[in-house]
Length: 482
Image 1: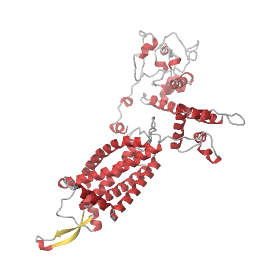
Image 2 (image 1 turned 45 degrees about the vertical axis):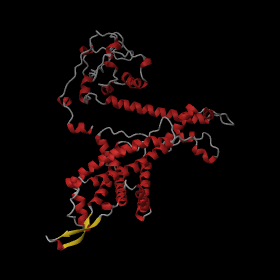
Image 3 (image 1 turned 180 degrees about the horizontal axis):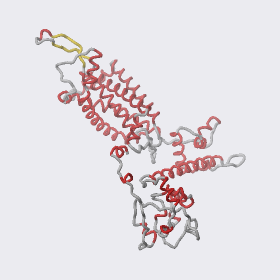
Image 4 (image 1 turned 135 degrees about the vertical axis):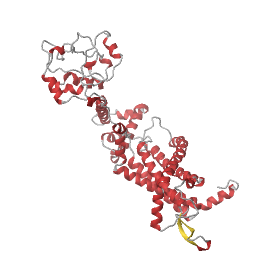
């Protein structure tokens, strides 16, 4: 870069583009970008991966598939750093360089040797470090997730809008990565340097300070070129990732009826009822959303009848698959609701405690165990809550222990004492012997009193056995894993 002679600078830059090593570096960078895009295609996902704990994240990092991803990106980063060092020229050009080593104090005994160019080695290791860090960020930050935009825009507008943010993020991230690598090289830089010098029979240049010292790392030229190398690596990889993200989530119109017999597998009803790749399935659902909102002509094709026969094949196929998806989603939500309700409950009583409580019913205790039915208005109760409340009314007595401490337990809500359910064990002349105490709620609110309409009603006394093991707090290592 020569700001005082810009014409000469531009001329020399164009002359360097026609050299053999620059052309080879450009071809090698093209291969690297192609490999990065292959990994983007293989590792993409339409559903984000949420790690519930640090242990789950660590297990995902050491998974063989992720290990291959990290090693490949480290190698690709080293190749990009080598191309950047070769095109930079100067002191970063080669791994070895001629140096003068003196065996005695006299300068006449100086001999010419081959020494290690630690600046070139520094850039190569920096590229491997950035490639591995990019792979970890790719996993932790869910960069493989492809979010579908709610508002469709042209590809050029999306790329132009994201490019300034991408450049700013790459500059800052490259700065932090150079800082982290300098700290790591300060402590462990002697290991690869000694290994390469021993393997390739290189010597250390006594005229230059080693880079694993404070004086060596404070070289401004080295830090500047390292930051530029990291910026070049991150910009090229993030641009490839951004273009893949834009082109993959672009809206695609699937035909509703095939024009030819060969196009039957490309129709929207066929794709929805088959088992295609997840990205193709999401594109088909996105096309169905746009069809239902904006396209009246295509909606007429959906509701059209077949000739002859008059059967709504398109609507039947699309409606059936949509209902199946809604049913699967409902089941997943119910399972997640049960898991969330079980998280944080009191410790479940042992089998011996349950057997003892079932075998010895206490009539004097049942006097204050007045059943309290739920007075939730049915219009305001969610269907998921209803499904979780129904087993509490119809399940047998041994299942009562699994509902202790549940936030959806209706027996802990305040109700009028005179109201009894038909299915409750207190209805009728004979009470059920399978009666046990409910555990206290983990949280209370003022809405419990407002629901009953009787704020002055005395609450039943809850007797809970406290064990020393139950009262003990979890260890610090368990809390860190969570």
